[in-house]
Length: 199
Image 1 (cartoon, one colour):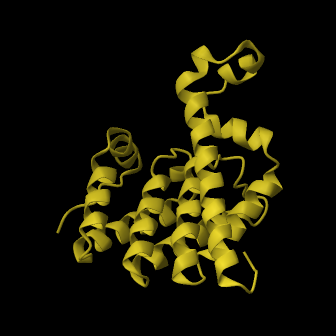
Image 2 (image 1 turned 90 degrees about the horizontal axis):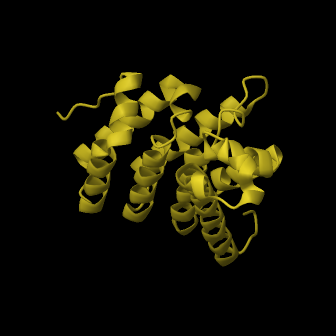
């Protein structure tokens, strides 16, 4: 992500987003299809959250390195940013509580990711704003993420509400509506007292 050639950084950010998307897919399979996993994956049937498997199988430092690389990309050229914010969103969807420990500076990483995503909803091209909206939406699919930093999650919800009120891009508004109305998200919002109101 630090190559001087823009085309290399674009391809790298695209690959990083696809890698994070694949990790989300793995957690989905473990959570929803644990009852039919092969016998050699019996251990994973007892996991209540697929994110726990990711953090057990992939070294913590590797996952944090992925997040930091995506964070750097989210501050780059718009063509890099659109993929990097997507990677951050997927990362926030599968990140487990053990990944962000209060004993080191990873909580700062969590808040930096949220702040960067919020910034990308405000000061970028339409494509980057839509991907940032999508990325913030992924945050609300992760129940544990809602407990990491309540103030950051509230700031993310506020940013999404402002975005949908001011966005001229119809795709952004449609995505926010889907995020807001999804049953599992609605339950998460209610548990955390996060009920955004239309003004």
